[in-house]
Amino acid sequence: MTAHAWLEDDFGTDRGDGLKHAGVDFSLVGLKAITVESACDGSVAETGTSDAYGLHVIVDCGSGFSTLY
Image (cartoon, rainbow, N blue to C red):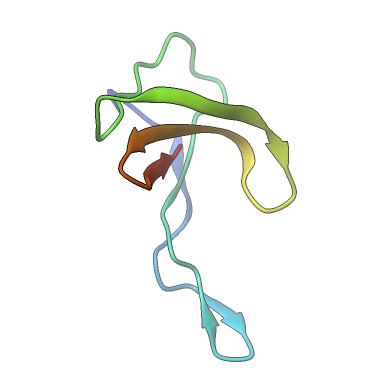
């Protein structure tokens, strides 16, 4: 990412019942035309909004590996 507004949720944040947040959530609120680069060469497998991921893009990297943004 070239920029972000703030960090919404850190890796390892306690989720209760022994669960921990397994990612890092960056906010892009109020920013426009922010470039986000994938960690792999791949193809977009999914875009959408969900309770679990919020606004997101999933990139299929091949060989059973994908990344979530």
